[in-house]
Length: 133
Ligand SMILES: [Zn+2]
Image (cartoon, rainbow, N blue to C red; front, side, top):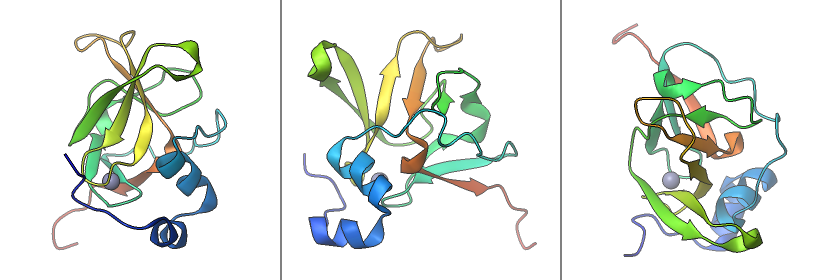
């Protein structure tokens, strides 16, 4: 099924930083430990490409793998089998704009046992705000 949001390469290039473009549209991987600085407060992580809510801040955990890690998806995420680099992995993409986000591994903490290992550059953090504040 075609993604809800479709843009030309030129449009994505204009909207995204070169690194975000490389990761989300070309399936790249950012350098480890390049996005450790996300705030710890309550909030949501949204797709850098389309703003769709992808993960809840309280599902984020410290995996020490070098990329933001979540134990559970908090939004519309598609999973694809990825056999590149001689490995069998499960790639995760934004359902709405088909942005490559990262991979999900079966070695996360309970109760899900999942570790969504996500490129920080593919995410934007939106802090929880009090209504009307
Ligand atoms: Zn998206």
